Image (cartoon, rainbow, N blue to C red; front, side):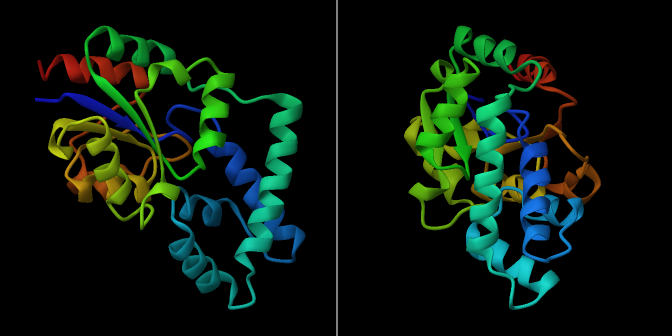
Length: 217
């Protein structure tokens, strides 16, 4: 029986993954690395040590992750300050339904806790979450299972009693390794074929998650 829903933030709750992709590419190119969309997508939700290894595999040992990341943060923060950030379509509908139907709800994100809470508050979603869990709070970030195990513990259920919502391969691997019933909600691409053996289901959008949960009652 599913008792809780644990969700990623960027690309699932917030329409922000496109910003990460844009500004990772701009930051990389600023420092002379030919970073493209495929590279930015390849490090979605990926913890720092894994991301460093992957980026240096693509661009060589001179790739300075911290310097490029700091530039990405600077560019993205300026954009959000000027233009705001948007919730994904159906996010408020799903979260309101979850609370009305007694599910515990947690966030499992690579973003720092205060920043994540600020973004969610800005789009009116923060109050729906029982717990905000960040990779900064666990030994290993995605694709390791730590953050989903941590989030399940924080809401008082077993990982096997959680539905996990993810849009990226790294996130799906993290949730599945933790033992969650993992649902792919595609955002910028659809990695279903490479992940289908790890998935409980695929939902085309957030409102489709409601129908999925209703079949589990």
